[in-house]
Length: 225
Image (cartoon, rainbow, N blue to C red):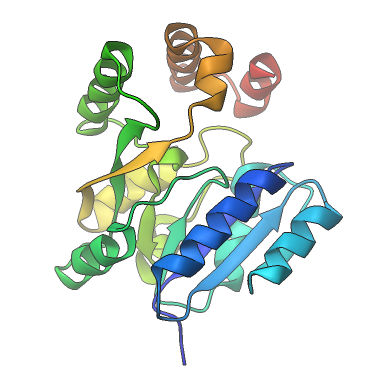
């Protein structure tokens, strides 16, 4: 039986988060899911976690965008869903994807929200992200999904360490309906709390500005680290 959705998960030393995500995905669907974990660290622990949850495991020492492409190349389902390893998947995620595709969408993405207790800062920054995505680019932590056909036509992810979704989303919007879902995919806040919400937001915006001005993703990734 062919799975309705292939879920591609790039992983890099995210074993604990990956175990939680795979457990969650298994609990959400009674239908078979084609889950592909693409590991950039060649971790035996990551391979074991993937295997224990029935996910396929690939090891690729390449930028995240190239790992996305590798996972998509192994997918068997007509719909591709790209998830970060620390994604916090809501109950309505899979039904919402299915409904959007059946309604004619070529793909789409989830609303941005921060996990955990609400605060003014979280609500304000999330609202700004969602407003920006009406005109700009949603990034990977918003759970981008597409039909396999639309993904191929859009050229797939760029083989980049950052901003690998930019050309993909731009091309997808040209080739078909690329729709925001009215369902949130909460973002794990561990990195935001570590760096500070406002500081991390500023850094992210500066990185995006640099990329739009032609600074290479590789150089930006070195600066970011």
